Length: 83
Image 1: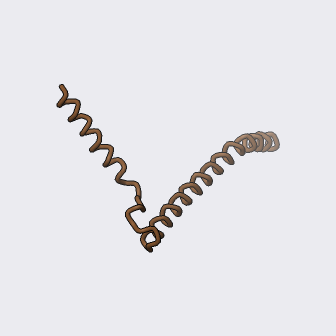
Image 2: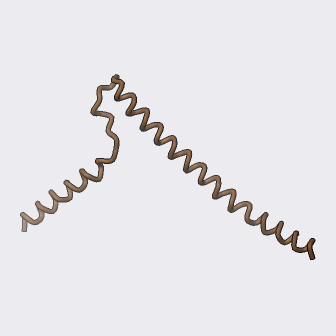
Image 3: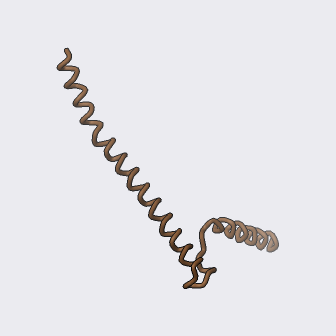
């Protein structure tokens, strides 16, 4: 029973290491090296791009929601005028 528990715990640790492998780790470089600065710059760039994409998508969704009522009102007015 203990062997099964230890085996399952070991298996979980192995899987958790693979799940974190996609993250960029800049600590493997020296602090003032060119590679460290490039690594940190790429991290900042990627976070900025993702944040701006989220902002743009949120703005588009907000505008769609706000303008749907106005578009409906305009359609009703057009129908009344054309009748």
